[in-house]
Length: 199
Length: 199
Figure 1 (cartoon, rainbow over the protein chains, first blue to last red):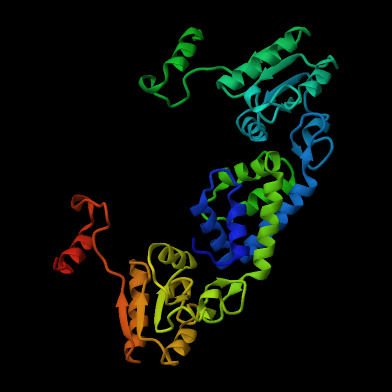
Figure 2 (spheres, helix red, strand yellow):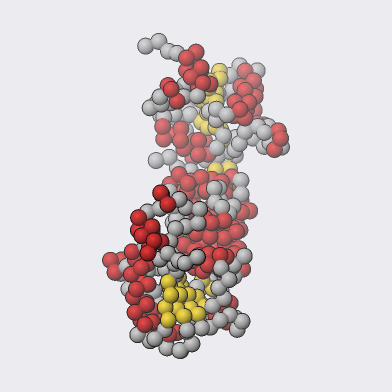
């Protein structure tokens, strides 16, 4: 295998830890930064180092945060009687961009996956139970992904909430806007049909 | 626009200097490293910093190198009478992986593009002329890309070489292996037809 030296090889190899980046893309990224974007590369190296050192998880909602208690959890203007459970930090941003939701969030950082050794502890369920037991939550909104693992995780959490008499809701399933009936999968169509609404 | 804090925003913005990375991919990369791959992120930050500090260009062939004179230029076992001109460092690796070429390389780091202010100096043509004037080169192999700019650059360099009586060759154009005649563009087909070989 041809090479341009150990430091360049190491840089190409290091880029491969990024999601969706194979050997060709990694080489392209390394050469691009070294040939044309040295300032950008320096900035990336510093930003990465800075974020890895200073960004941790909020102690209450587990979202990525520079503070012990993130802006959302410490904001007195947000509603504290609604709690929305999501799998990833990017889901929080997606919901905030699409809706006017002003309640609290809780980030699982994944879903139940016993085969991968991901159980309730890894998802912060003990922290979640502590939140439940504060008795401030009126509505628990389950916004995990509509996958098998996401549904199983939602089911598990909903049982914990029901046993504490917390009202639980789930994001609606149905036909996406702009979709065509003919091309919607039968599971989605079945959900949309049985969940039809009066107009 | 929703945000998780200035340091995370800065990291997402810094990832956008990579080729082919838009806002969504940049956010995915940042969250992936912070949530799941902190070791990989640390390694990337260090590798990037290390490479930017220690990797420069070979003083003779302009390829990316940790040494003043790269391994290829200082290797006494390589032929010094053949010089292959390419646009990018990745072209050197591609040629080495595909062929048994053991001569010298020269990396332009681009092609002539007057509208972008890229003239002969930016491509290291003065260094190339110094190489020509050493009178060691028997064959100059032009391996720039078969684009308009690549062809113009090849033409410009071939004229410099001809005026010094250096034999100039160009990579063959024709139908790629595995291609179907029906789907080959007419320019390539015309080249392949007029350059037909006896068998």
